[in-house]
Amino acid sequence: MKQGEDTGQPLLSTARFVCALSLYDPSDGSELTAEGTVEGWITSEPAGAGGFGYDPLFYLPEYEKTMAELTLEEKQKISHRGTALRLLTDKLAAKQGNNG
Image 1 (cartoon, helix red, strand yellow):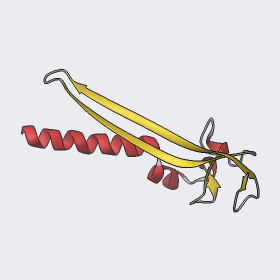
Image 2: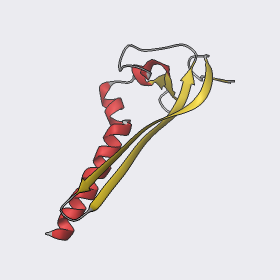
Image 3: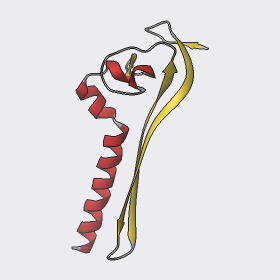
């Protein structure tokens, strides 16, 4: 078992948050997809009061914190949902630019 660098907690397993988005356009039958991910570890002890659900157990080595310990700004920067939405928005803008 790997030890957390800052917590000394055992890191039980690798983990990944994934958000997959798909947008179908019935006018032309096209589909746009985008995926965002965040890589981390599952810890043995919850830490932090932010977030919800599994956030207190999801350890991010690059921040040396769990997802629940991140500031809102940090969390928004790396959010798997935010990443997927930004990618889908960019693809939609590019599609509209090609059709305009």
